[in-house]
Amino acid sequence: MAKKSKIAKNEQRRLTVARYAARRAILKAIIRDPHTPDTERAAAGAELRRQPRDASATRVRNRDSVDGRPRGYVGTFGLSRVNMRQQAHAGFLPGVRKSSW
Image 1: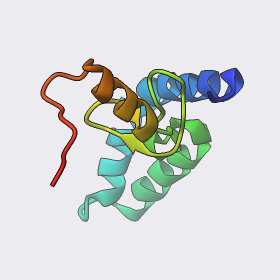
Image 2: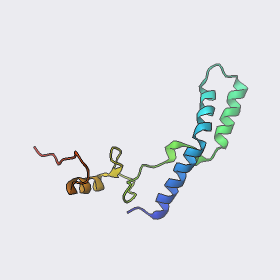
Image 3: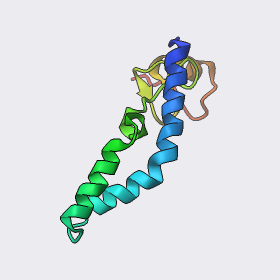
Image 4: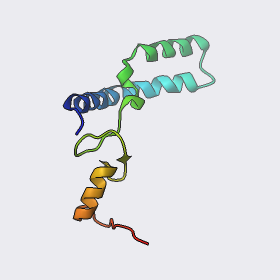
């Protein structure tokens, strides 16, 4: 079980990313466009740097939806490898079978 504070901080980051996503996309498009004047590109870069660090999507950590475990995340199910195995054995994940050969 992850610390409650880490889970809460990650959720706060998700909200911040969602709040700034549209503006960040516009600024990045301005910076990427080769026809943008240098002064406008520099201004867009400066505004992008003024935004909070947590506005970047790479700051959000994928965590297990059951207990918040940050490692071994399986994106298909939103679970860590540990919880995925437990739930698959219990029959809670339809279509998932234990392989044997």
